[in-house]
Amino acid sequence: MKFSVITLFPEMVEVPLSASMVGRAREKGIVQLELLSLRDFCEGKHRVADDAPFGGGGGMVLKAEPIVKAVKMAKMGQPDAKVIFLGPQGRTLDHTMVMGLLKESGFILICGHYEGVDQRALDSVVDEEISIGDYVLSGGEYAACVFVDALTRQLPGVLGDEDSAKHDSFYDGLLDFPHYTRPAEGAEGKVPEVLMSGNHEEVAKWRRQQALLATLKKRPDLIEKAELSNEEKAYIQQQRGQL
Ligand code: SAH
Image 1 (tube, rainbow, N blue to C red):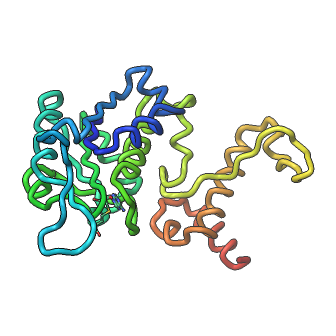
Image 2: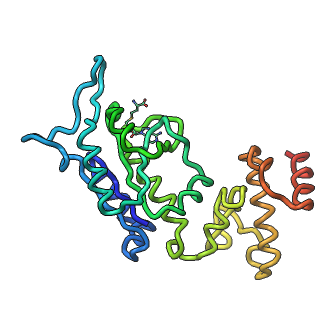
Image 3: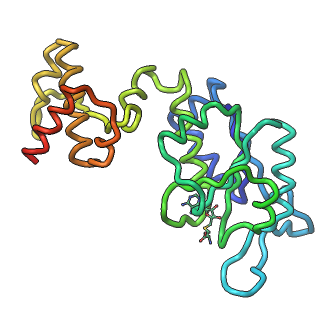
């Protein structure tokens, strides 16, 4: 999967996406990251990428032309890529969207900055606007990193254990179960006995119950939508009574 990121601040994307899982996925060739510096598509001696807004008011606006040119350039490398503008007015990214987007071969991600982007650029080149939540960031670069990371960790070969993403929160409509590591006993307390029993069936059962409990406590809205067995529904009913 290829991600072409168009930004005025390439280092804001390059640095975080060089470490850890995404960094390794890039090394393994599972994902490619291409950074297009908006400055390279700007004209004039000073290569100015932004200007004051028509109609007055504060904050600078990224010019349309350099963005459109950068998208054209990125499209030459991946003609089928989906062009996404990361912005607070878009559809909010969630697990279901992430999984749906995995069918794409690649993305061209446009990062706004300052007050935003000249609307004409967005109207002419963007396929979809995606937000990472109902708050305003100072730049789309943070959102681009979130987008690349969330998709990359779902690709085969990225996580050490193929199955681990399947237990992650939201994968099956529930939150994740709690995790413990060595030491088994310390100042912070003891690890639940069952995890050291070596009984895989019991461990799996306990984990599922803990996932149900965590979801019930922290995100009761998800429980309503999750696919549960009758036994699990009864368990939830019983736990509800105790909360
Ligand atoms: N004036 C704009 C916000 C500009 S913030 C508005 O109120 O709609 C500067 C840039 O940060 C945006 O152009 C966008 O690319 C990015 N950004 C801000 N919040 C974001 C969010 N929640 N999700 C994704 N990108 C965001």
